[in-house]
Image 1 (spheres, helix red, strand yellow):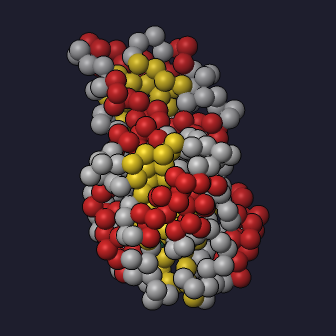
Image 2 (cartoon, protein in one colour):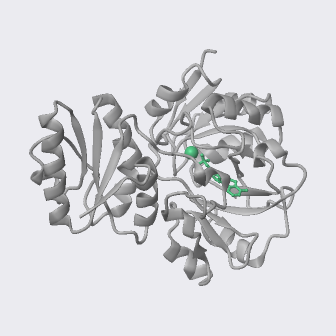
Length: 349
Ligand code: AMP
Ligand code: MG
């Protein structure tokens, strides 16, 4: 199929383009669009056949549920039993990079929730995304707009790379400024539980409700005795073509270890990508070095992470070595994505 592409900016929305895309959603088609977290691949959340097309275009496993995107905080038609904590979280963080899990009403088909009785709801802050939902007149189910397993796209060219000719329409906007996906909080349990760290930090959530906690399986390698709570948590994710290894510990020792491993690969005629920071890049003399930004600006590091992982595919490196980051604030989401992209291959120094 030929993909129709519209390029616009958040503060200069091409309303005709959005209307064209909304019409595709109304007719049961699939559209990729920008959000502040990563690009989304959307279809009418209430139409099982439309939703099936998302799974097909991405090659997504059928048991991995979708997040439903809304343009309005009034979600009484979609979910039941909204707790007061859920209301407080929506009041504080909608629109924005937060998804809350609630009990779904029957209007949401099992295809969207992958058979679960619960559903994730998010109201994006990106104006193009919200306009698309508004014009469509229906909630939009949307996972990230990448082929399943790959790093999520934060820029329209990466979307095109994965989805050109696989979807009816792609809207390009400004690059996703958060750069990692939404934080997912399960509000069907008491106290609420974070199933995926993301754009809203645990520290921010705790300001609304102090007892919110992190599901222990988030930072651990999935194993038989630690069953993931959400189906999506068990899949290999965010993976560039080359294997990723994380070197973790004291920064000086990290640099030494990375240089030692790089030399080993070079001796074996292999090319190496290095994920560094502004503070450390000068210490790597060999390998293809990319800085994520300064360690003093962790939001920038989150913003650059997926694009950097994908840039190593363009360079065809044989292996990617990454420094590690502190796991507080947005650092928790950064390390969660890095750990998964590395399949938890961590070298402690
Ligand atoms: P993606 O949209 O590709 O970033 O993935 C969405 C994530 O949200 C997946 O990891 C899902 O497992 C998770 N998710 C969506 N709906 C639910 C739900 N009802 N319960 C638990 N996790 C969910
Ligand atoms: Mg995804």
